[in-house]
Structures are given as C-alpha cells and as structure tokens.
Amino acid sequence: MNAMIGDQTGCVERYTWPISGWRLGRGLGEKFDLADEHGMDTWNDPRTTIDVIVGTKRGNDMAFRINHIHLKAPDPGKTVAWWIKAFKFTVVSDEVRPVGDRFIRCMSEDGSMAVNISGARTGEKPGPGDASIHYGLEHFGIDSADVDADVARLVGLGAKLHEGPLSTPTGGRIAFLSGPDDVRFELVLRKA
Image (cartoon, rainbow, N blue to C red; front, side, top):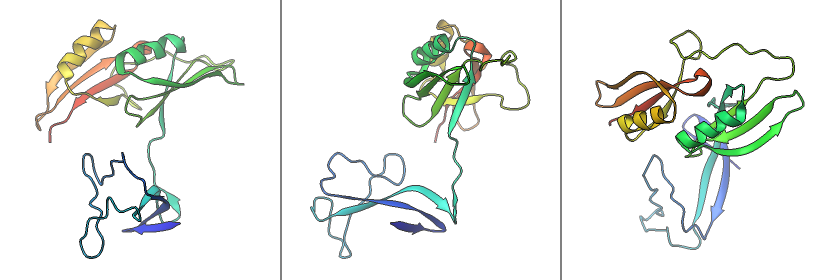
C-alpha cells in the first residue's frame, strides 16, 4: 500500500488490534490521538487500524539518510570493546569478510545509528587516524545528558580531551574528544 504525506510518498504497513504497548508519535514523546470522524476515541476499539509510513520517499527516489559510520582500526576487537564500554554499543555481527578484514557491525545504544568497525583488507595499508581539526570528515557527534560527567568518565577510559566542555549560546554544552585510533567525536547536550 502507498500513502501520500505532503509531497512525500512511502510504503505503508497496516497494523490492527491488539496494539497495546505501542508508543506512536509524530515527534519525541508525542502520542497520536486516534479518533474517528466524530471525535470519538478509537484507541481501545478492536476495529482500529494504524497505517505506519516506513521508508518515506520524495517522488520516485528514496529520501536520503545516513546509513552508518565506518571506523578503521588496527585491532577491531579492542576498538569495539572501548566503544561498548564508552557508549553501550551492541555488536550485531562479527565476521572476517572475503576481502580479508575483520568486520564488526555495531549499533548505538538507542538503535538509531549503525557503526561498522573493521581492520585493513588484504593488501591495504591504511594511514594513521587524525584527531586534529582537518578537512573531510572531521568528527561525529554523540548526544549526552551530562557532558561534564561524560568527559570525566571517557577520559578515565583513555579518551583524550581536545576542547571543552563549552557552553553554547543556546544553553547547551559541547566537548571534543578522541577515542581509539585517533577518532575525533563530539559530546552534545542541546537545550530547547
């Protein structure tokens, strides 16, 4: 089934009762109000169906979204262990690919971002990591509920603090650090 939302179309999956335990929302923390054309609550009506848009598209093209972050490491297992301890990543798979590298697929704690960590492929000689400010992909950001406490915790795990913690004009906090293999990342606390 297809649906149109504004100028976006997408594949629709239809779910029917029971839908207990679902938290549906238009935004973080919002719950859909399910009502019929007369304004009557239909949430508990066993005839209620919910159409969920999965994979929205613009015209015939899939909407762009970041698929994953890929980190190269001389010792992928050691690097993955650090990210698990630091940010509660989970390992999805761990394999040696036909091209000769150990390839470990991880997922962020909230399940929103895939992070792949691999070694060199057969015959590859990767250059060193670079945690300095540079052109190209310079860092990636990770949300934090308490930047100052996370900086102290991560430095205790061996991360290097490069800048911050700093207050932002909107009342947030940020800090730049590097982890294993000189991968630069930013901790971000946003204030509404």
